[in-house]
Image 1 (cartoon, rainbow over the protein chains, first blue to last red):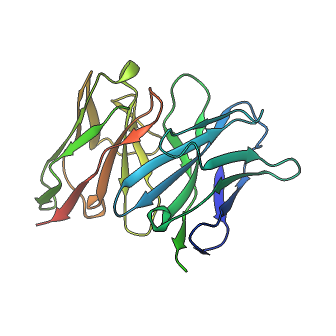
Image 2 (cartoon, helix red, strand yellow):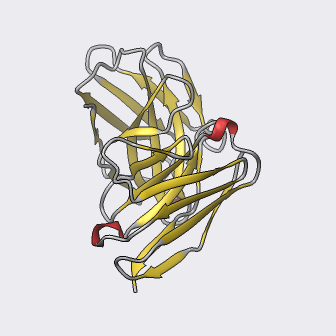
Length: 121
Length: 108
């Protein structure tokens, strides 16, 4: 059973870059069976899919965030990461990492517990 | 982008009653790629239903999903105390993946 755990700073200053890491256990980040996703939840916008990364490094982003987001798969650890540049208060949210299967269309079967990121000076 | 609208916003019911939650999409959902999640305070969403009507592993049979195209329904036949939570629908057949705004099922 896959388990995911987010980590990273809980406070980021406006205009700076938000960086989070998700550590995967119970399976390999380099498996062809999964897409690795980030989803965020803020009071103002509910649940929002940020994007997906595949073990090969291929990425897919939500157009609403595409210009500020990058995702990558770790090279030496069972981790994947998220970066959001030029953050504002609107980026304050609980950030979840999540896993989907690569067979057909897939919902998010696996979720981390979430980490709150606050954007404030 | 497919917009999902959930109704009602809040459902006030008693344990043992039947809950019917609605999710309407702005355009047809590809291959019935519609999921329902349950979320309790301080927890991540938990997958209940995928493919519009298939229960995820370990989900009790009092939870059922139905619908196709643009109209989908989650039914909880007899509410248990642990079922009072917020429920979200999600479409995952078109990018970007999108979620509905949620329905809160609260104790009456």
